[in-house]
Length: 375
Image 1 (cartoon, rainbow, N blue to C red):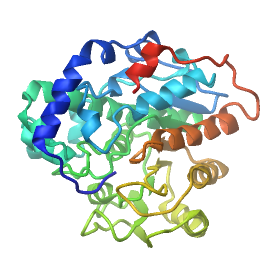
Image 2: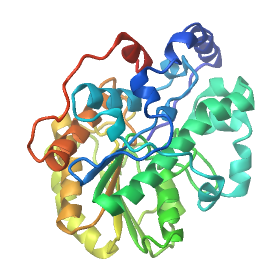
Image 3: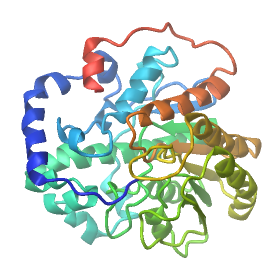
């Protein structure tokens, strides 16, 4: 997810002040969001596709998102659109709990986790200088806890994929977080934590990570360096962050300006061999949409259609081989990033959850409260 960028602490502080004025309106969750707050079971669409989401993914510091390239409301926008389009209801969604300290420590060192008690350290990892001047308790509850819930969402999605075949977490893909440090807007490597959790539970032995975010999955590569049971595959733009790159089991560097046809051709050529080499019990797809043309932190030239096809290509390849697959959302920094990923998830629902049938629920307009909450 990301590239280096700096913002003025004064501008950021102003965002907090302005955001505080909106606190009562933006932090009061509408009923459609309150219904996905407490951990509970949902319903797999078509008995094949589980959707995981929690209202607790929301970064609870209004105003921060206005001065950071990552849209902290992206997850809420996708959930709301799936809801109003009639593709799911709140009771359909599987709601995760928070990742536990024991699960997180399976990947991250105690020294690194201790550093998260420092707002300045968190501000550095997330490239959000305004966090450095806030109380540690507020940074934990407003920023780190949502990341822990998103990590819990990837763990739950992984378990559900083993049961139903496909699961998507409407968050996650924090692939820059390393065992001993955070960076690139990432503090917990949710994919690595989910894999280690499944291995500890003896649900799987081997896993494959297919990372198609525009930035290399350097954190995931380092989490599993030398680990034969996990194969890491990353296709990414070669000329941008991270520099230097880490070493995945297979890295493919793409030229600036790579378009749909080129990207998909390279993926089709390599994916079967990657799956054969990995021999996975489960596949994790990091489906960042910062490969989209015009992304401010990247330089590829994919279209929305190409990204939807890209994600479907990976899902189809796994299901043809009867391999469970988990989709996480990763990066994407254009104003339309959420809509691109909505289109991809909608395609999965229509293909595997509905199998060509119309949406099961009535379409409706979002309420004013929902629009404000997800804005």
